[in-house]
Image (cartoon, rainbow, N blue to C red; front, side, top):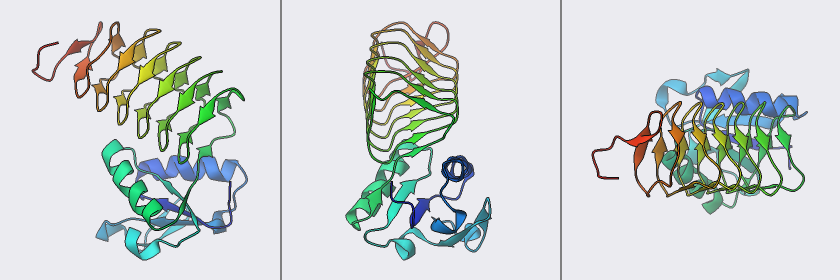
Length: 212
């Protein structure tokens, strides 16, 4: 991972998690910049890293970047803008995460402290494995997905793109989840979920007004 010039996109709370992981991995604070389009954040700082300007002002071809935004669709849009400016996506892994050498992480991912990525698991680009998340053996996680704190994917689970797996949710082994699904916090998913659906509860049931 190139660490001499890293632009972090987004100055919210998730950026703190990313900065903490980078500093813990030995990246010097002076190598980091933050960009955010919110006018109120201009000139502020995140864990003593200055917000240098808007995203468009800070794009530099060849520099590394990481989109430190939890919202999946926003993260996809911002990642595409950075890649379109010939910047290099960087995966960030906290030193206290456990990542198997037989797992695969796509570019631009975050693996936060306490997360576990087991052998044979594959995680798509710009996805988030947040604090304490468990992605068991042979899972496939699509790009721009967010596995929230302490969520657990059993062995062989397959998740599409832009899925939100809420904090503490559990997906039984072998479950498949379509693109753009939302799974509520603490839900227990017992069967496959169709694309674009929202499920919550124990056991998980559909709450978006559509039929199962």
